[in-house]
Length: 292
Image 1 (cartoon, rainbow, N blue to C red):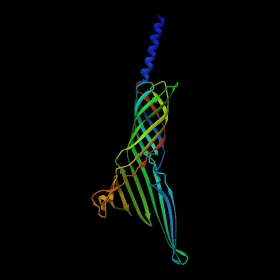
Image 2: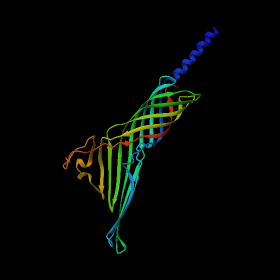
Image 3: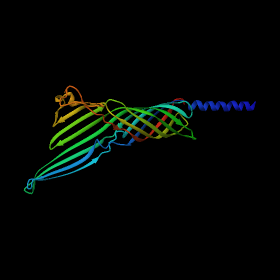
Image 4: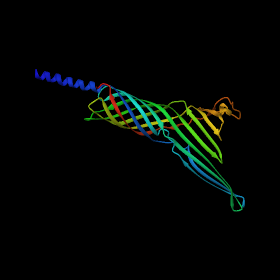
């Protein structure tokens, strides 16, 4: 009789442990992503110096170009995970994430000098500053694998990631005193990638636990359309005087045309892929909705 009672108690405790391990949870989190991979063909830091000497009709030219490592997946990340554990070790999760992309900058400086009678009689400098930024709402359904080691739960999460966002290109130019400013917004299409996370969950006695994790995302994004949303020269708005082909662009797989283009239709260019791959660190809390 005592052995039977002991067996019932042990079985009840086991069932209780499993039921507590199963169920829904929610995880608000905050982190920061660092660049992983880049495009070096879209943005540069460059300087050039052109000098013309009227005394001997000779000119000299000197320039430097430095590639800027463009990656738009770098920045702060705010998110919430909605998950369900089927057992102590296996679960499924939906990560909802918002990326606040950090700006990536490039600059061009061009100087023109004229020498007459051994003296500098004319010198002008033109500058151009370009900035890329991106914000994106990201969705990542994941498989969750975890195991219990005392009060610590190591885990792995992996699955596809979808990204819905935009790329903003801002440019400010000073062309020897003529001030120009423009903005182009690229959007449309969906970024598709892979997300994987490794972390540790620190258990507490209540329903709330704490976690820290490292995340890796492999992703590129190719927008399908773009629009010039700002064009100002010396304080004058240029947009009302521009036609559709000068303000709107479509990214297509094949481009054809000639010397005549319909001004009422968007311009067409080949697609451009922007890297969003990153490696990040994140901290947050888990609220187990099955515990009280």
